[in-house]
Every structure is written in structure tokens, then in C-alpha cells.
Length: 134
Image (tube, rainbow, N blue to C red):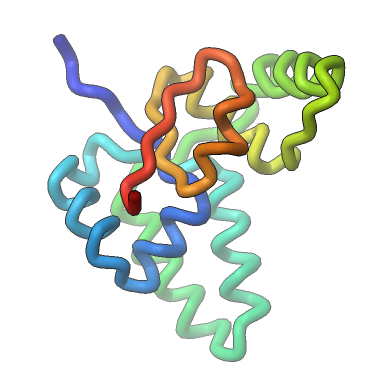
């Protein structure tokens, strides 16, 4: 049986960058080679760095962080995104488009999504979720 691969959500990535011991320990335990990021997470991290009071410093942190992991393209996940967005809308449930794209990335690439927002992502079908800070 192969070990699962993981996709870090933006909130968990921020916790890593802020030095949260539980997240850093789990990343080290799992190993960076088994962890990926979505292009959406990278975009959100760069946005956060740009709007900070020390953008150059935080952009360097983001660059170092993203260099540890594989970055997954969102183009192949657009069908999953569209299906899930339509399905959730018909059910009267909402999920932010960026969250939907991150979740769709995990579904498409068959990854376990690591997030603190378990409740949000539980709405998506065929998505495995873990919280490394619980």
C-alpha cells in the first residue's frame, strides 16, 4: 500500500511560515517529497506577503517555503472545480472559489488536503481531509 500524498491548504502553509510547532513537526515527519502546494496557495501566500509591512522579507520566506514542495497546476482541475461549484450551488451551499480550486486540486491529483478549515471542505465529494493542528 502506498503512503498518501498531501496538499497543504493556505492556512496550514501560513501556520508553517509562522513557526507553529505542530505543523512543522508533521511536515518533517511526512517529508517534503510527499507534500505539494496548489498554485492558488502560492498566489495567496504572495498576496499576503505583498500586503504586509515587510513585503521583501515575507516574499523571500514564501519563495523558500514553496521551493520545499512540488507546485501543482490548476488547469487540469477545472472540470472538478466546475462540477463541485455547480453541485454545491444546487444544494444551497457556498464555498470560496479559491477554496474550491484547492479542494479540486486535491481531488484531481488524489491527495489528502491538510487544512484547519475541515468544516468548509467536508462539503466537497471525494475529498480526504486532515487537520495537522488539531
